[in-house]
Length: 271
Image (cartoon, rainbow, N blue to C red; front, side, top):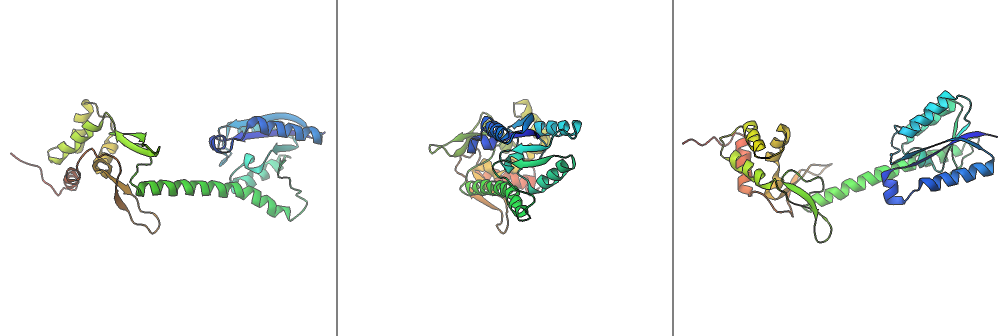
């Protein structure tokens, strides 16, 4: 009777998008082992962890168990190769390391006979496909966020002075937060040319504004406060400023007055 470890895994995305079930994976592996006559020595499962790396708590425990019981485990079984890993380069390295420990990795729903040379190609496809899927998903997310920016939407966490919300079509939008009046005051005072940035930040901090030194400078440079959205350069596309769909906190004139002060184009007023 061959002795095996079974491994199950789901990530947050798996749970949200595909409905992968740890219980279903475990059930399939147990039935497979029963048919094959394998003895399951241990079961390890990672709940909510991505397979882009092997830095997963239970997988690390799995490795420790194999190393501490060298020669005991003959196979590591998963349902599919993407439960093992979603990074082809790391997969090959880990498979090699496990083989050195006398453990063969197998995916029961994507079986391969390693004695058949052509199956090396099939294994490569199984291992690279999840990584391709990850990269496509990331690219789609990035492109979607970029489209949102070009439509004038803030698609990330709202900056200080705003908070994230949803419009009537359930699309993301930002609205004024309780800190909006302090942001307006920051621009108004900075535009006078009478304040150094850090002195002004400390003054407003005493009035309730919560902002670090670096973030406060970013605030004063961000056109989002005058109703604009900055779309950064990407590929052959140059950076552009588009009209936002959110309500501005300050006027464009005030925003550019502050830019002149920061660029030292506007001298302090004297009485």
